[in-house]
Amino acid sequence: MAEHEKDKKITILINNRPYEAPKPSMTGREIKELGGGPMDYWLILVIKSPDSAAGGDDKQIQDEEVVDLKSGMRFRIVNPATFGYRTWDCLLN
Image (tube, rainbow, N blue to C red; front, side):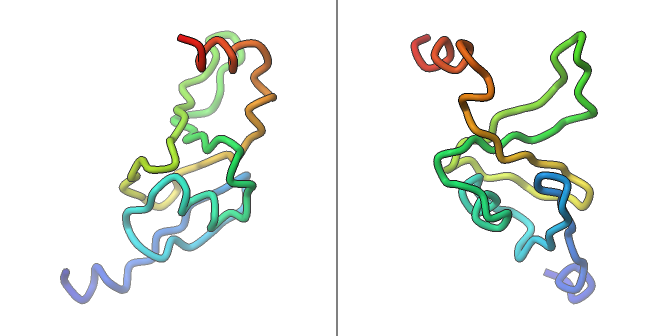
């Protein structure tokens, strides 16, 4: 890795709070830990601003899934119960 790449800081938002990522790629679990979220909650990558009519383009990130981070990426740590019956639907199918 070039020297200038090591010095480049990656700032991500977790629940609308800025965090400096300690490395350029992190797992979902590591991102939740960085944000201080409960480990049994879901990590959601906000692809673009949610569109209530279309349901937005958010993506659930699994604990073991590796994310290549870029400054400005937005994540939410959310209670799975927030999604109501759809949570159980996803788990059963």
